[in-house]
Image (cartoon, rainbow, N blue to C red; front, side, top):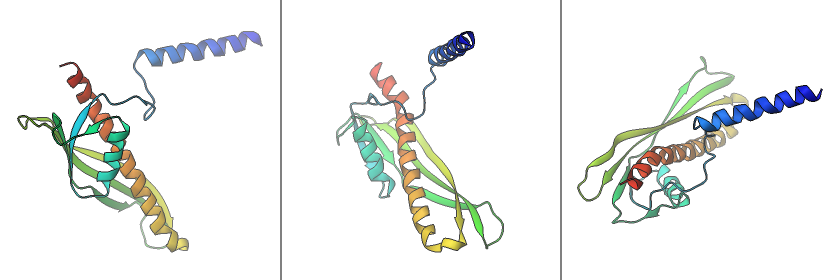
Length: 167
């Protein structure tokens, strides 16, 4: 019995070393700052804008009007697609949030990240039995998509932060 446990522990240790060696990281697990010191933030008027602002601040990025880089965030678009045919009973719906963004140098306006798009989606099951809860379920899904989009934006800025640190 001890031989089997030793083998399991050895295999688990080897697997963790291999994953660590190849650069594997759990999504959202990284807690250290992004590496950008300051950023000028120019958002369009949308419900995504304050969530991104908070995510940037939580990543220890100072938001300054005269920062060397400018983050432009366009309005979000939310679309819903029904995967279920028919109108009665339970419906399966895909909700997708897209939001274009770009990053420019403020000194010359050159694009470092030219018109990219945040794209996140989720699937909901809603039922006609509880019509009052459908609006709450959708609103919660929209908020989660916005938080996911903000995390995706931070991950897209990470390579830019690393390239700025190497300059």
